[in-house]
Image (tube, rainbow, N blue to C red):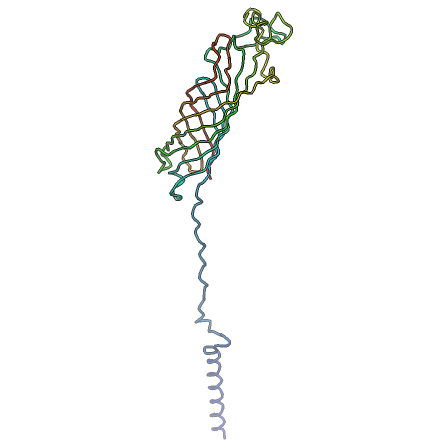
Length: 279
């Protein structure tokens, strides 16, 4: 009896051990694993698509121009024109629109101090013989053609730029303060003796005097220049322009009393400094 009881007990223990091993190693539904055989499953990382650099298509610049007969401030808005969009930042032409404000000066203009002490306690300077000031607002369209590109950021790109457009001349009389007259005077047949008498001139009456007497003179302009871009970043513009400019107006204008005959055409050479952004 004791013999059979021992055999029965041994069979129960063996069966329990086998069942435990099946639960630990073979149960697919419960997914139970031994601590010695656990395997970590890591989901593959999803790669983000690499975006290509945005193609440069526009350009906005501002500049200051010094000419042989005056000065200008201007702005240009351009659109890139190229057959190779991938290299538009280094090899491109440019179609642009320009807005400009300029002052024209006569080569004979020279600023000198007033001969007498004015009522403000100082001597004011003025331009002797100047009878009119000429300003102009110009709008134009131009095309900047590539001559040499910028394959490297340390290089200089060179373009040939040509502009043509409309010009509106603003002719303003030049007023002086004189000792012999309590009021400011401008040049005329009646005042020319006092206007040109250096011994009685106190000085310039100021820019605002004569603004209500502006004469508007329509005309046109044309310009040709070589543009050098020195920027080291393809999104910036740092340039220098050298070129020639011509303006034509619908009537003749006289800036100096000694400059005869009056002129309707003005020519100059210039150098300009330009900066801006591309995007």
